[in-house]
Amino acid sequence: MTPPSPQPGRNHQAPRGTRDFYPIEMARRLWLEDKWRRTATRHGFDEISGPTFEHLDLYTVKSGEGIVSELFSFTREGGETAYALRPEFTPTLARMVAAKANALPKPIKWHSIGPYFRAERPQRGRLREFTQWNVDIIGNYAYEADPQALSQLGVESDAEIIACCIDALRAFGLTSEMVRVRLSDRRVLDAFLSTHGVIDDQSAKVISLLDARAKIGEEDYKRALSEMNIAPDVALGIDRLIAAFVQPEIRPAGVYSSVDVALQPYLDPLAVLWNHLRDLDALEWCSMDFSIVRGLAYYTGTVFEVHETGGKERAIAGGGRYDNLVELFGGPPTPAVGFAMGDVVIALVLQDKGLMPSDDAIARDMGLAPDVFVIASEEAADVLLRPVLAHLRRAGLHARRSYKSTRNVGKLLGEASKANARYALILKPDGQAELKDMGVQGGEPRKLQSPSGAEAVAAWAAEHIPKA
RNA sequence: GCGGCCGUAGCUCAGUCGGUUAGAGCACCUGGUUGUGGUCCAGGGGGUCGGGGGUUCGAGUCCCCUCGGUCGCCCCA
Image (cartoon, rainbow, N blue to C red):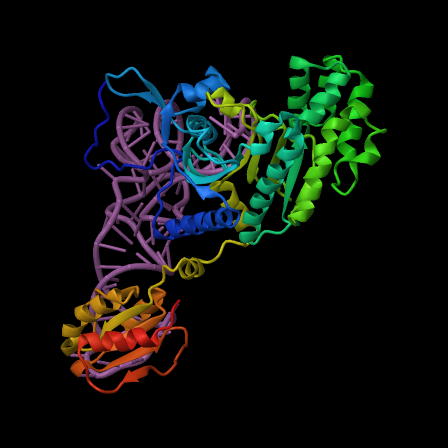
């Protein structure tokens, strides 16, 4: 096998499904990540990070060999160990928690922002490399003391996770009219189906059928159910269950009789969850929707997805409860719940809704715009240029200059304007200077009257430039 | 992995029936020689027309392959 070698005159391209981030794209990404980070911090999550590749079997243990075709996996030249670029964070998280489970104070509230990789064919909203935000709450002291309390204590964390996710959506300027958090609980459907004799494989099939229902259409859905010998009254019961819970405002007590009393133990926690969501000012964003099941096998209870209301884009975020994953990776039995939000879909949705700020606005928001753009108006002022820049920068200001040869102050001010500079500092010979507020079109510059050295000019300018 | 559509300058696109040295706008660079901001004027750089092969006297244009983009299927952590 010949290693690929660069050929003269041939253009190299970024690999399929990856992106180059030029300054503007990078600023947008930083802006996005900043919203995530600030939201998580407000909600009390500590930021962590892990390796961007793991042992391959970290992923096959949980998801089976079938997952391998979706991964970028590799072995070192001459090595034996199989690795894979991480396709998700949860296994790493479970591993990290399992390794120090007894030493970490509970509950663990961690979040993480970083790149992930999936060997899929890129399409709208899905790339091969993307940035993802993971937010998780793991472990619960009370739960360890009393496993029976899981359903009650779990919803406290479930609600916090969902509320954090919603707060991030708020931070992006989205409203509850624009997006919907669709909530479900696998335990409810499982319980309903098993009380009607639908169990194991058949139950899983029904659930994945529900997942596909909107896509395949009502007729195919019903035909598939009857082919599985699912009784019509069971199908009807599923619909009534779904219908009864579309509006969170409907109190679960009111639907027990119309659905199935056997579901009560699983519906009670949902009622508590709703109350918590109301307390956390999150309820108006949420709808129950038992057709949400999530593809992953490791979810054990609550699952949710965030979708744009128009239904045009892929899920903005998704998550759920995974109470046995830490144990699977060698830790003690530990309840956990979390969600992930990727940069690709949220960016598409923000663009759809006109909520993506302009490049200039992002530069300002992120503090990337220069505080001051220094112009030497005449050759005699050149000697001041570098020392003044140095002093401004030492004073903590973001200071830039032109590299053009022109002395045309109008052009140089144009450059300052294009660079989004807040102020222009025009150096004159003999140490005089003018400071111009670029936010005021045609405004009179502030003038430094008495001649001074570079340090004094910079100090004078710094004094008159307000903090961004 | 499978299918539809699309590849001409950094971007958006013209380019006639196959016919000379491939064009425009925007962007970028320079200048408009003491000038105070997104306007204007002039000039400039930048393309082996995604790549390779074929048909032809001649290919940006027609055919095949390939690479890439995009949309969908599978999958979706």
